[in-house]
Length: 451
Ligand SMILES: Cc1cc2nc3c(=O)[nH]c(=O)nc-3n(C[C@H](O)[C@H](O)[C@H](O)COP(=O)(O)O)c2cc1C
Image 1: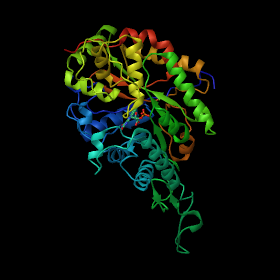
Image 2 (image 1 turned 180 degrees about the horizontal axis):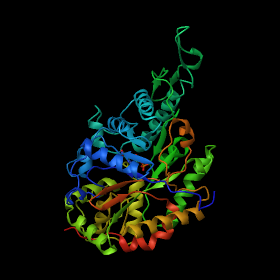
Image 3 (image 1 turned 60 degrees about the vertical axis):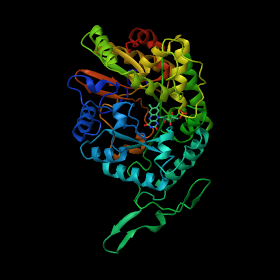
Image 4 (image 1 turned 90 degrees about the vertical axis):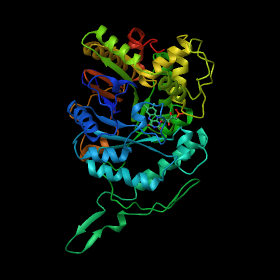
């Protein structure tokens, strides 16, 4: 398809208090992530703006030093079920961990929400990286990183298998004959694996999409392998190094091919957080103001979480310590942030300023035109570099049930957009695009403002 015919997909990574950790302190901004009116208003705004995806992240433990929207948050499936009642087109993505749930529950819940929403459900498969979460689920500790992915791989297979235990048209409900279902179209799963044993079939008929969309965001080798094997789209982290980004892109696409799929079956969806102002200067002032509201406690907690190492004992104005990127926690953010810190010779204070702003995502700021120009540059660069196309705005919103299976193969880009009081935070993009935008990124990257 030619570049002129392709459109850009945009999604919103929703945090009720704003994506910036201190966004809630902005005049007029929401200070709650557990308010139905706030989240409903964001969903309606996103839908009106023709965004493709409303995405809810999740964690299974509370840390008082965390991003405010992680301190108090709705259970994601409950939230998207409620929002499916007040939206019509937008895709609804919810995060559920494979480390603390059962495949039958998850298959059933997403099938239910797919029915309730008319084919708009998406599952962000995560393995969870918080030791504290284990303590909430009768466990002493998390399974080790790679084992979590082995569990996740079987978990996803079982969920997909359960979704396939019902064929289309199995529900007959013939009043004349009294036949309710066609038994030949419903079968058990009879799964007996290393981690799960599930008889099936599911106790809900096949959902509109057949298989709700599967999202994956792990960037470690086993995370990439799970994406390549089973995901419909991938969230990734970019931070300005086009060579590393392109290499990661190519490596993932090669894995996709290895699994007998086409590279275009797995769009990669990096994140960005733009701060918008009426002028570039005003946008920068907004960002500086937001940064000045962060507390060192917030920042230290966020950076330690993201890189998987406790930085609290290190001097802030010294270089970023030579931590290994390999961590038992999440490796995607850890690698992106530590690579960036080394490349740009950052101090720990630089790193925590960058991380605290958008939790490790790419931050840009400027006028709406400047932001749109950057998006366009990314899009055009991606067109040249990524022939199957990675950016596309689905102007008519997400498709209804009839088109839903095709939708699973849509090429999309995602991330997050939260609009409040005239500024916006958005995650979007593609690694390939970062080449064109690197100079702009350097201009707008937040610099130290924290004490
Ligand atoms: C954009 C994005 C969103 C994510 N959302 C969540 C989330 O909501 N909950 C969670 O536990 N992990 C989340 N993660 C973490 C990953 O899904 C993954 O579990 C983690 O990075 C560990 O995997 P890795 O070592 O393969 O990177 C997210 C990662 C990215 C890049």
